[in-house]
Every structure is written in C-alpha cells, then in structure tokens.
Amino acid sequence: MKRIIAFVAVIASAGAMASSASALAPLPVAVNGNTVEAYATGVAVPTQMTFGAGNTFIAGAEEGPMKGGLYVVKPGESAATKVPGSPDSVFGVLWKKGTLYATQGTDLVAYSKWNGTKFKKKQKLLKGPKTGFSGLAMGPNGRLYTGVQLKQAFDHKYNPMKYANTVLSVKTSGKGLRVESKGLRQPWMLAFAKGEKSPIVSSLAQDLPVGTKAPDLLVKAKPRSNFGFPKCNWAIAAACKGFTKPLLKIQQGEGAASPMGLAADGKKIYVALFGGIGQGPGIATTNSSGAPLRPFVFRQGPPVLSVALHNGYVYYGDFSGIYRVKM
Image (tube, rainbow, N blue to C red; front, side, top):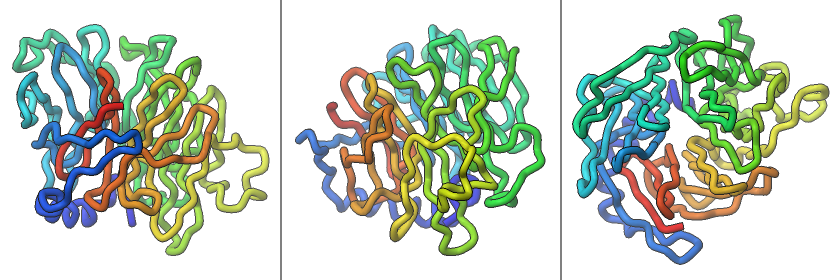
C-alpha cells in the first residue's frame, strides 16, 4: 500500500464506505472504560488538529476526489466549515498565541487576526521543498518543526532533492531554516514530550519491493541525527551500523501499522495508526523512552489519520469524521 502521497486509491475506497460502515458500527470504548463520542464531520482527510480561540482548526489534505483545506469547528457546532481564503490542501496546523501556523503545499504560512469567521491576515513565512512540508510542532525553543514529504518515485532509493528525507526547524519569522535530522523516508507528524528538546517523529516505511520487512519508525529527531535511509531501512540491523537508532520500530505484520498523527501528554505519546496493530485502525500509546505500543482505542473501520489532546479529551480523525474520548 502506498501511503500518504500515493494512497489515493485506498482513500477513495475507504471514503466511499466510511460513512455507511461507521453508521452501522457502535462507537468503541477506550481501554480506560470511556466511550468514544462523535465530535464533527466535514473533513475528508484530517491530517492534524489544533485548538485556539475556542475553536478546533483542522488540516484537510486533498487526495484524489477528496477535497481539502483549512477547516474550523466552531463552539456548539458539529460540522467543520472551510475557512474562507484557505487553500485546497493543508497538512499541518498549529495554534500559538493568536497565530495559526499551517503547512500548505510548499509553503509555511501564518494566519492571524481571527474574527470568528476568517483570518484577516495571512503571511507566507517560507517557501520550502518541491514535495512540500508535513506536520507541525513547536519546540520549547520557540522554533517550528516540520518534516519534508516524500516523492514517491524515491520510495526506497536516494533522492537528490535538497532537504529530502529530513526534519527541519525554522523561527516563527520564517528565518533561520536548518536541518535537524536526516535519513527518514517519510517524516510525517511530530510531538514534543515533557522534558524533550527534540521532537518525536513518525516515519513511514518503504512500500517496495513487495514483501519488504522495513518497519515504520518513531524517532527522536535530535540535531545531527541520521537514521540511515535509504542505505538503512532498519529491516536488517547489520546494515544500520553507525546510524542513529530509532526510538521504536513498528514491525509490519499482515499489513503496515503506519503511525500517522502524534500527541504528547507529559511523557506519554498517543499514536494514530492508519492500519493498526491487529485490532483495526485506532490509537495506541507509547512513551518518550520508546515503550512497546499499547492499545488505547481501536475499531474495525476507516484508517485513523490524526490525534490531538485538548481539555482532558483525546481527539482523533479518520475518513468518516472527528471523534473524541475522555482521557
């Protein structure tokens, strides 16, 4: 299965059956005994969520027939609406001190002066690599961190493009761009655990050749770290001598687990799993030391793309909508 940029066929089929399947299946119960509740609909491919000014802002990716953009769920509403003036595809969103930062295509953008309906100010901070940026997180140093998206032609081989396979950071002014970490096939979403100066990053394994045993990874993207891709894909440890060890290797079983969104609660890390770990897609937990994944909430249903934490709830998004459950 070609994930993220090249999973249009999977998304289309999942999207077509998501609403009917989810309507028939009861909402799951998390391992803490709390039942999941429906929160909002209206975003076909929700990749990241953030919270500000009493609203929930959602990045929606455009994939095939599924439209994207920057969406908002306003207080008391259960349907997301597209923010006027937003683009057709957004991958990362982060609200901080009245500003919403977004990765949209090759641009890092800052939106501000929210009036309850739209942002009155928009500033392009940075034009990035041709493949575009992935998710967003802010470090304790006040810098913005993001990953560089994969060009599928380089699924398991060297990409000569500048910044390919890297995690980057930049000041909120858009200046001071620097490489933090390299050698990651598809650095996707990021989160900062308590006490960590560097982000934990989800990185998706190669799809080819068919039958590959390359694991998905969670890594600590420390400065000057190099996780080895494409020379090392962590399927064979001997090939990875000299490269930075990942925090956690998620082995492929019958299908790829595909860690997507990340959210940190202290040292605990919530991980959105596109494919799951044997119980269907859902949310699992680990920690900043790389403990084995433990189920938090799973169900047989659409792939899960994103996870976020807010006011005592775990929020997650799949192709059928946005859901939440008490922590």
